[in-house]
Image 1 (spheres, rainbow, N blue to C red):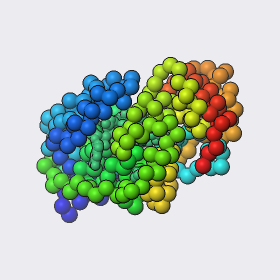
Image 2: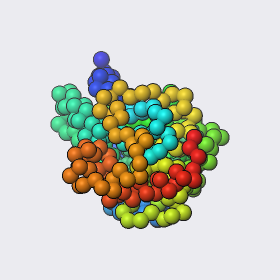
Image 3: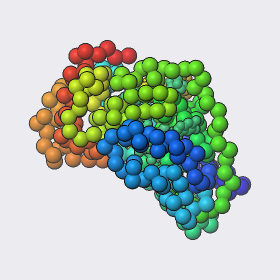
Length: 312
Ligand code: B12
Ligand code: SF4
Ligand code: SF4
């Protein structure tokens, strides 16, 4: 078996949905990134400005690397009756912390590369200066949809992207060149805060995901009233995508099975909770990023919005 095939077989064995190989050469979309940053769409995510030089030239992330192995990790879990009426939590955040869960299996993939002759391997999953969507598209794994998600034919977009930079000189896959969105605009039309300002251009400062996870402090009332019951993250522009409606399948990764559910819980859930209890219940979940104060704020916004919204 060729080494590239053996790597993909190992990725499959580790539970990844798909695996592709690319090179760490310069970004083709560096101007797009610069324009996006200049428009202020990153809001308070200052780290995206600091990381821009490495995103433009992924070779700078790891000068030793000749190849990048990119994987997709399915996190889809179906809704229950309760999870669609609020308080709602985005699917990606219902299980254990994906940085650790995906990261551990990426580490094992890195070990396989080393046992195959690599002197260097370094894994990234979300936490790092890696232009993950672009590298995944370049590795042939899917296209960038109008909602900015990497979408994969016959899979959809409910997956995390992980990568391993390595000094192995691997044969790269062909990039995914087709745009399979066609004339569809469902995601743009469905976004309740009008955050997708043009195809593939997201004003993060209007996105529920940013507002409930990344932004500190109060949320503007005109945006909060459109949260459609979301308390953490948002799935709307993924849920309406025909590729997800047709192809999303339940994850087989046990740690991504729902652990956090707010089904039927009232607006006071976090009000009287101590920091200790929050840490015990949500310490190893994505909710840790918002923290207790953030979740108190988010619950208020979500319940206000659910008084006015009609959910799909
Ligand atoms: C910052 C960030 C956010 C911000 C901003 C999102 C955004 N669209 O930029 C916020 C907080 C809003 C966010 C929300 C979410 N995020 Co986020 N986020 C990131 C992060 C850390 C950086 C993204 C970034 O650099 N944005 C800046 C823009 C300019 O870059 P970009 O989106 O990567 O776009 C590149 C390409 O699209 C390319 N490009 C532009 N035009 C075109 C055109 C064509 C034809 C092609 C091929 C390429 C192309 O140029 C850009 C620069 O390389 C990445 C992890 C990472 N290291 O990349 C995760 C990441 C993108 N997020 C992820 C997820 C899961 C989400 C949410 C679904 C979570 C949720 N349920 O709430 C939402 C989805 C919202 C949405 N529609 O994007 C996943 C996406 C997986 C996927 N299938 O695409 C990632 C990759 C994390 C991971 N490792 O899995 N996120
Ligand atoms: S995640 Fe929600 S708020 Fe953000 S762009 Fe998608 S639909 Fe809009
Ligand atoms: S909803 Fe339509 S336009 Fe949006 S990403 Fe999916 S196919 Fe593309």
